[in-house]
Structure formats: structure tokens, C-alpha cells
Image 1 (cartoon, rainbow, N blue to C red):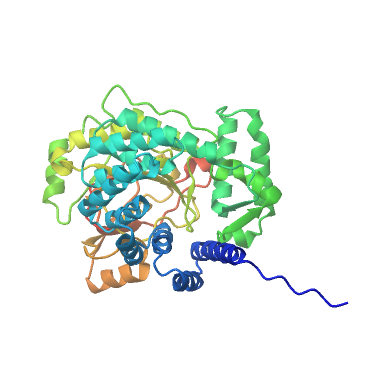
Image 2: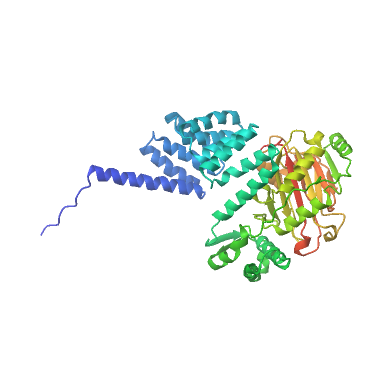
Length: 494
């Protein structure tokens, strides 16, 4: 009996298989880029282009994956090629606008985002990008309108909130900005998956969260239902080897341990309201006229002001930082950050910012609050490394009670009298310790040391290189060193 001959595939079946193989390779190329296998990704994309050299989707995708990694200049050639092939594609026009905007070509970006919106006016992310372009062009009312349009089309569009909040702040609509911050937080909390099989965190974060929960429970801010969470965090800490804690080594918690740390690592257990005061949030006895003249005539620009906030404002913002579970930004040095967009932006914070602008008009003129945060440190770890910030004016305020500081001659800020070169990238002036120290040494920069003091603020040119001074504070949650930063305007690249 002879074996039957293998049946040949029909042309339609061959075409279907080739299509499926191409789709699989397309997805593999995208995934390879997302996980950092750039060479493999490009090889797969180039293989696809040999088969489909005139397919604009491949070029657009090669650009889009680079945008996700913030490699805007690398994305441009691929998006240009895609636009040459299909100049009316709304998604390519949108991505091209995003690149232009992030490269500082905002007016050009505005033309391409309008092309995208004309073709597809019901895509939320397009309106978000339009709002971001409006903000950079100082069209704040339009930015608010377009951000709200984006949220109306997709209420889960989390990326819209930073532009919306910044635009409301620029317009002086602080109460609305505070409401938007809380809306963003609640949305973020709703989207957080508490059943995640893995959670990444530093030991310093887990220790802080345990201490904060303990503080909240003991002060009757949260109920007994959180005692199990506190016990779980303590169990995780007790299991950590001492070396891991001392070196603050990154930890990846899995399965049961992940469920034990997840409730606090990226969630908001307790978020009290911090309303505005019915009086000036700054110390009314300050001589604002003299302080402005001192700042403007100093070289480089810098002044130190004691007893800066009113007592009510100081206590309000300090208690909020003690209680609000907003400390989600982790740093290797061991300190934690609470950012304006992620819970630090409250009615009182925005009132303080408004009062600063009103009381120091010669310094701030038409500068907008671009960012604000609070850093919380531990007593036995270093704080913020040497860096400069992008803003024009930097305000650095200390809010931990005075008796926590064991060395009255340290614990504050070290500012150098040299500013970052204007052509440096953000990664250079904000993070590159070797490059910064080399610049300071070669430019013979001199340092000014400002010791820590409760309710003391340093107002200075934000481009000046600066760092936290070494400090010696008491141990214990209530004694953690906390400093608040306000950044106004922009003079360096971001």
C-alpha cells in the first residue's frame, strides 16, 4: 500500500501563514524593544521591511517604541519616513508632534497635533498631547480645556492630569488644582492591582511604611483593620538580612510577600485634606521688600530666611507629611519623595505658593510654579546628592522640629557659586556626579553651607549646584528630616 502524497497548501493558506508569521514577528520586535533588546528588535523590524518595504505602519511602530523609551531624536527618522508614505495618518502625526514637542520645537508640534485631531477628534490621548503643547506655549486656558476634553473621552487617561494640574496652577486656580490632584490619586489607586504577584521596593521604603502605619494607628488616624498590614510589614523587615537593610538593596517581593507589602508600596492608605488658611500662610512680620532687594543684589542670587511660614501653615504641612501615605518615590540613598502630582499638591501647598508670589513679586514676576515636592530622610543615611534643578528660582524649606537635629551646625544645604552650563542635558546636571564634580573643581567653585533650622528657607538660583549637607538627627519616625522644595520657571533643559 503506497503512502498518500502530502497535500500542498493552497495560495490562500500560504498567504494566511505568511500573514500570521509576520504578525508574530511584528509583536516580537515590539516586545524586544520594550525589554531593552534593541539590536534584536531592529533586526526583526528590518526583516519585516525587506518583505514590506512600503509599509508605513512598520516605520511608525519603530518610532513609537522609541517614544515610549523617551528616545525622541531616534524616533524622528522613522516617523518622517512613515509620514512620507502616509501623510494623513493621525497616529503618525500625533507621534511626530510628541517628538517635536519634547525636542523643544513646540510651535511646529502644534501643526502636526492639529492634523491628527482633524482626522481623529475622539481619541483622548490626542487631546492630552494638545493640552501639553498648549501649556508649553503658555496657552493655559486652552490647555485646561483640552485636558478636560481628553478626560471626557477617557476618564482613565491618567497621563492627562500633570498638564491639567500645572495649567490650573499657572492660572492661579489653586483649589481646582488641588481637586485635580486628588482625582488623579483616586484614579491611580483604583487602577492599582492589589493582587500583583510581584512588587519592587527598597528596604528603606518598607521600613518607612511600617513606621508610618504604626504612627497612624497609635494616633487613631486609621482603624484596627490596618494592624494586620502593620504586622505583615514588620514580619517582612524582620526576615531581611542586616546587609540588605544597611546597603538598602533593591528587593523584588513575590507571591505572599508581595501581597504583604502591596497595600502601602504604591497605594494611598490615608489621605487627609489640607485646606487653605483664612489668613496669610507666610510670617507677616517678614520684611518682604528688604528680602527681595537682598536677593536681587546678591551674586549669585541667594538669601536665607528664618521663621518663613506662619505657625499654622508650618504645623499644617508638617502634620500632613507625617500622616499622608504619599511617599511613593524611592531613592537609593534611602530618602523618599512625595511629589506635587502624586498627593503633595494640597490646597495649603498651593496657597503657600500663591502667597510667595504675591509677597515676592520682584523675584517671581510672572514665573509659574513648575514643581513641588517633599523629601523625607532617615537619621542614618545620606540625603540628596550634588545636582542642579531646571527652574529659575528654587525655594528649599525645612519643616522637621528643631529638637530632632543633634548638630546645629549641619543638616542643611550646601550651595556652590557656579551654575550648570546652559547646554547640559538634564541627566548631566541632575545626576552625573562625576561630570558635576569635575566642573566644580575646574571652575574653582566655592561652597556656602547653610545649617538646618526648622522653618528656615533658602531662596536661590536653581541652576546653582547644590546638595544636602551631612546631618545627624534623632532616630524615630517623628524625627525624620523633611525638606520642601518649590521650583519656579525654567532656565535649563529638561
